[in-house]
Image (cartoon, rainbow, N blue to C red; front, top):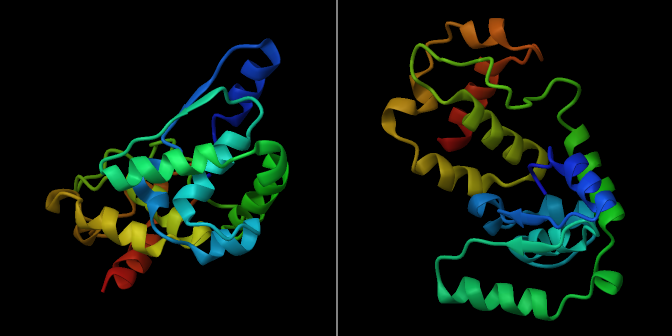
Length: 190
């Protein structure tokens, strides 16, 4: 739901009759946190993790889904979600995709495509990872997930180490104000 750059490839695989196993439907746990923005935009009143799994399962070109789980509770929730899911009745991939496109449009014309041209950072900050988190927060309302992800960042890669040298911005083909976004994330964490 939040990282959809492979959708054209998945679509083409479906056209060719090639099976597709989708990995990380819960975005590495990012979608295990709740987002009222996602619920409202997609018109689905389910826990965000179930919504994410249903979104991937509703794609007619996806053959199977491989979701990571670390607890028995997660396993049971995934089993229930899949067992009780009927893609013809319970979700419309095109409608859900349109809702996601509207959410993404809130980012405007200048958003990170994770090209990594901003790297290497002189301060060893993992800018693409942080920009992914910024997008998850701003476009999809996943503030708790972003906070959780930031808590496990190594200190040497922490966004607070940014000296605003702006080398990343000079290299960014999308002309993103990366330093401003880093400041905004720092403020959100405080």
